[in-house]
Image (tube, rainbow, N blue to C red):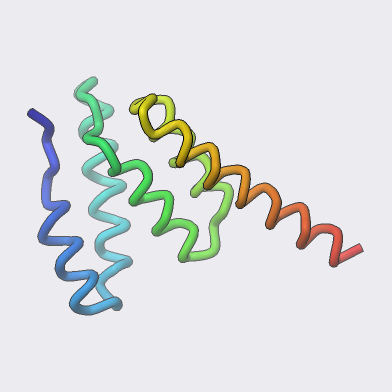
Length: 100
């Protein structure tokens, strides 16, 4: 029904060897871009997974963008994706207040 690409093998490899998570990020970026280019629907969870990889790499802006894409593509994920986004916004605001 959906084109998951190499998601499962990449996920397994990343859990087995965390140094391969960067390769997973690149693989997900590539696969999502291909699907979007073909106007195919990105499978549930892939935007969120990529967002979490961005977050782990320290890029909360990219994470929020991916969580927003997940919410917009899969409305049933709205509650979780909104909560994730709110938490990141609160964290960003708290860090800004500490710097002042």
